Image 1: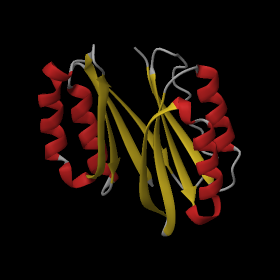
Image 2 (image 1 turned 60 degrees about the vertical axis):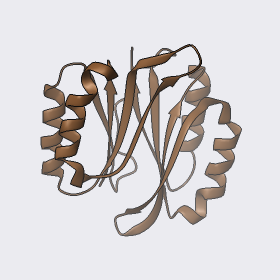
Image 3 (image 1 turned 30 degrees about the horizontal axis):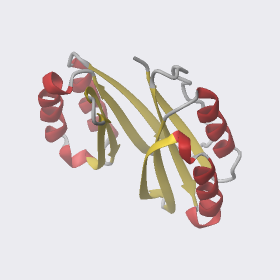
Image 4 (image 1 turned 45 degrees about the vertical axis):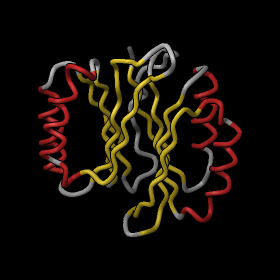
Length: 178
């Protein structure tokens, strides 16, 4: 099983210290961490996001998640990849005002990597952040791509739909509403 945790920190200045304390306690579970927030010449957003790629014991994942949920000022979501690619997942909230994260697991990455790359290039104006991770999925090589999407909901939906049509690709979604 592959597990990705998404954390929306409502007020980075106020809440990050509490969140970081818990993440430090469970640092041995975290293989990859990506943090981001809106930043431009006129704005440094107080809202931030953290994506965690986890390893280890699922019971420890649950304990970490429970501690995070006790904090005020954050929202926690998850995506799970299991061997059954047909596993249903929650659709989340569809809104232009939220943040949508896609996880794309490419089983036997060498077969589909060109097709996936072509789609990501085609929909490039909808992808704000991209992180690629080499992964093992039930003992087999795989590629894991995490995407933060932006822009028109219809375009994000088309990208997600087109990715789901590819053989050996499993797609999961997290959506944080505002």
